[in-house]
Length: 277
Ligand SMILES: Nc1ncnc2c1ncn2[C@@H]1O[C@H](COP(=O)(O)OP(=O)(O)OP(=O)(O)O)[C@@H](O)[C@H]1O
Ligand SMILES: [Mg+2]
Image (cartoon, rainbow, N blue to C red; front, top):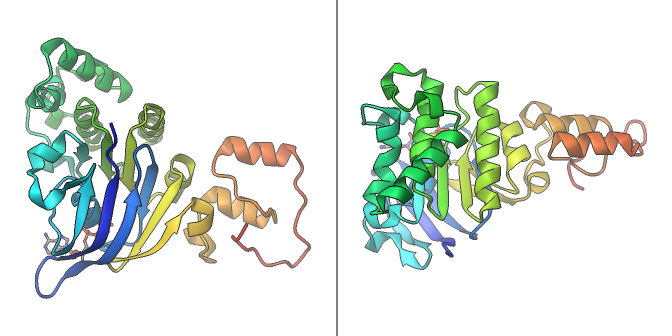
């Protein structure tokens, strides 16, 4: 299983007026956890839709595990890249949660017992086991999003793309999402998520791609990418460690608490907060 994603000089025009991506080049290696961030309309969805063929390059190339996505159907790419839509309504169509989650692995041609095990695992991972017989449209929007995630987890693809999984989610669902990311990464799967939630981003991802107006303007660790001096746009952990004058940037609550316990030396008074470590 090695499904590196190579993006080479990718440009995408929706029409003559709208260029959504402008010459993006990057590689996501198998097993990485990558967050894609940027303002509304930056091109995040358009970029990740290229990973499973939902969008096709206007120019440039996208290769998944060596396959040029322009030369393969969405169904062929679906075995490599599972894709959870920003809006679950674009994805859900079955009458029960279980049927929805079963659809993907069955479509990939897995044996019945394998399908059953994958469905059970995906429902458990998303906290939906007790709702297996519910109609997806009778669920709250946040739960529908979890159904969409479960239906992709059940396909057990090498790469999982989550387009805005955090939008509208409550604290319980955010915990579920963090556990899902952790579990996927622990099993060597690539996880790529677009998100506007900076705390979710730094706490769950090792690498951040920052898009603005169709351009990839930063690509690195959270500490490298969050160099913006506007404190309102920083993850809370970075704001706190910056205010405390720490030179390093904790990305989890545990790291932050360990830093406090270690009694890190504060920066000299009046020293501007810098995010360079
Ligand atoms: N189907 C479409 N037809 C025409 N233009 C589109 C289409 N989809 C997106 N766009 C435009 O392409 C640009 C990038 O959109 P995209 O949805 O990729 O951004 P995004 O970063 O995912 O935004 P958001 O944070 O709102 O989800 C925007 O200018 C958007 O209006
Ligand atoms: Mg989007």
